[in-house]
Image (cartoon, rainbow, N blue to C red; front, side, top):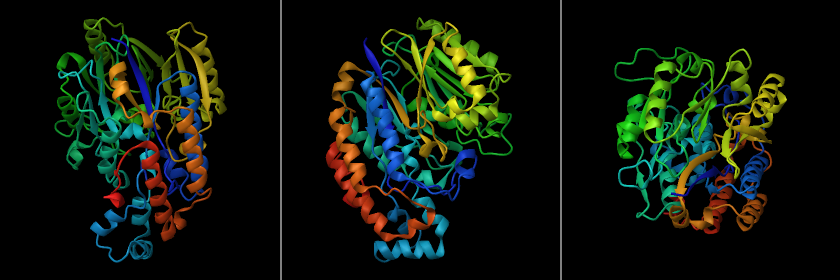
Length: 446
């Protein structure tokens, strides 16, 4: 059956700033207190979306969250008008205010895990919203994320939506950033590879410096919710040593497309056995596993973390070859750029490179892959998707005008205390829901 991999990118929110909230994410913590440019960040993301759509790839948009999240501050004991709540938090708990003001929902690779209809028992596309409970500033995203996904994929004949897993460390779920799907072609049955950082019950080894955010137990729960069977699932542990070097999600050390798994030599624990399982299960569905391993001798783990070589997108072009989408930082690193040029001239499936300037996102720890949620859709499912969330010339023009009208071009952590920022956010989001036909998905609209 004909199917497409649609990439739904996160639209950067109005409160994009560098508060350094994400322990374990080297870029996030190292750029703490830098001055951010929310307008530029949003426009950089939109440029990537539009460029890929113009190249013929299926491209959609996911909306940002309402920030600062006054609802969360009220649950934590602050009271009065919205302006008074923000003022109290700024005075008594400024780091808490920074957390509830984070624009981290831009990295929609963490929004949810998605399984296509070719893999699921009921032949529907399944979405499970990530609970993101390892970081407080992200654990408050799931409600709005779920409503946004349901507003875009609203036809229950084709789409099935699941709430986030329980907010407990045993069920730590970071969404598609730790999920890969391998297949011969998008419409065929495939093998879904769930990558986890630790096993809460009986795990043998864990990272020692940085937290392992995804648990095996959470991955297994998502697989059950999505009605996957043992023949098309593999659970693979990320190498704890690379987590301790700043590889906080699998998509910082590996990326998949079709039958290809592009990965670093040090990416996985018990890699030989896991790859044998993947190869065996892919053969059952008529696909040939094609791992591309990047040796440490050519690209170190540190180079991978600083350039986000693997936080890239692998896209299949009309001629069947693949293009890798990387951030400017990968071109700026001599060793990584040399490797990429060797890769595309090696005669393998990856034959083209596309570079994007995503500096505003990169400085906060998110590259091309962080900014997109992959959703495999048949033609019928694509038509059932909210078309006002699908990128085209009209939507691009509307959104660039919207960003120019509402976004600031300078924001620091100190600016989060400005109550006007909440007013600006709500005004903009109210307009955005009309542009994208989303309905009342935000708490202030309820």
